[in-house]
Length: 224
Image 1 (cartoon, rainbow, N blue to C red):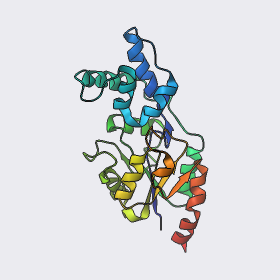
Image 2: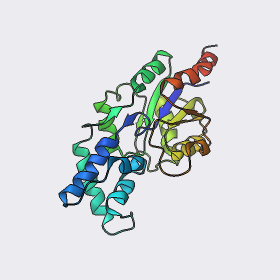
Image 3: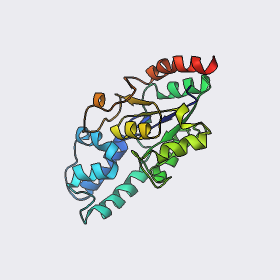
């Protein structure tokens, strides 16, 4: 019996890659360096600053230069948070369909609250979502289950009655650790690790509209 659907944010509900890549290339251009092609940066969105700075500057979090680069990246990204970020096609309709079906929905992202909360507000989702949980809300980030469990708590729903939807293997790992059925989506960033079919999700979807169809039997159970 499903009562709530929880979503990852970047690559699942929204395409934030243009702004994240834009902030990265701003840093390069400010240093007189060539911009990185968008196609190289987009798959790294799920890895956040670590992924972007790795591609652009060849640094890792262990490098001395990383902390300063990350701070600059965060500042530049914050300045253009919603400049080119948009909901994926079909997402708004999917969310409206969940509400019409009597299901609540929330956001659980590894994006820190500094960005996740204003992004949700800017899209008008803060008034609709039962919870918006960032990567620093609980002190744990996915694949740890704590953020998902906190979202379920705020929604007032037993985790066993929640579903988690995401576009990264860590999303599926977190959902399973929280005891939730998991949905992997092909329209997201997908990272550069093992293929989506190897993640072990309960179902893999190609478009947002397919989620409502997949949930239909469970909604029928809920109302039986």
